[in-house]
Image 1 (cartoon, rainbow, N blue to C red):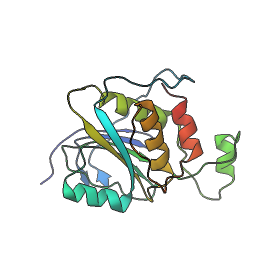
Image 2 (image 1 turned 90 degrees about the vertical axis):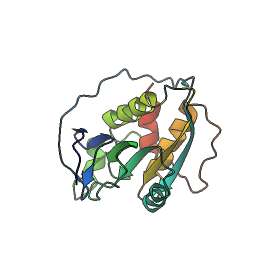
Image 3 (image 1 turned 60 degrees about the vertical axis):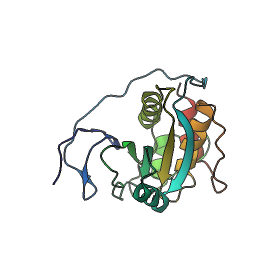
Length: 193
């Protein structure tokens, strides 16, 4: 009994606001353009409704979903993995990219050339999507929510996003002790405003 909801896809980024995923695949596809100013200054947002942020593994996120404790999420998957299925009332930003950092100063093409198979790298447009998602869901100071961020292992990609959100919103949320933020992801996020 599938319900009809909108799904927006831009390349390897999927934004889901109350959409239904069927067998890990969307039942509709639309293109979108991401635009925005890039700044080297990270400015804390005020009047935050996101009051805490936690990074989790895929398995831990699925457990949290089953308990009904997830209110807001950013879900990161490997490109060959299906997205986690969330209840339709939970706003979710879905991203698919590999956990690849590259060497400092290495271009995207140089990183891709190091692999024999195609890779999906965290991009500027994905970073803009993360910032836009946070700003969109950070507008009601009278309501507080926890943002859950997952990747496959809950260490690197979700750790970078969690660290960024924690500092963007000036949150005192403790960072998971196993967190080792992906430097590529963190660097691209830090360039956003």
